[in-house]
Length: 172
Image 1 (cartoon, rainbow, N blue to C red):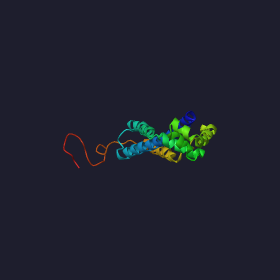
Image 2: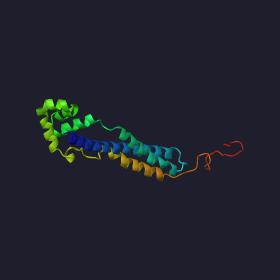
Image 3: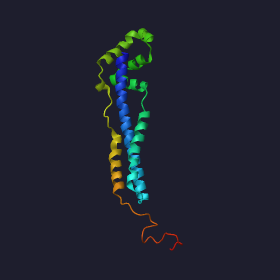
Image 4: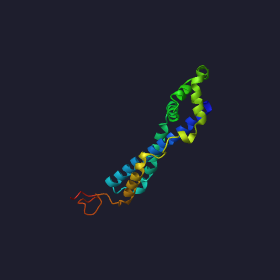
């Protein structure tokens, strides 16, 4: 029972962590796109190529944050208990040690029977890609817009801006 339960917990946790990581990376990409677009609009003289390094940084930070938000084993076992309809026998069996399981014996037969029939694909959460993926097309659109904005000279050096720069006094 322990081996089967631990394998199911590992499979479910891997799927949940993958979903969390993808979601956090999507929001990291969105945050990076917002920063790049804001910089491109506020300071149009900054070249776009260095800003593209933020594109890798956003999803990377989201990836790290997603890995840190791994669900505890007790939550995964509780999910399996509900998914298999075990009526709290799985969570009870998981919390008890081997000696206490011997005492409960008959009441844990249900849990063992359910685990014997359970397959990983039946208990894995679906879908892997969820509603939070709306951030990806939005971030791609923002990045395309930021890249397509023209790079201009700073306002002080632009002809006709009303100010002349140089070594002499400023002339309005």
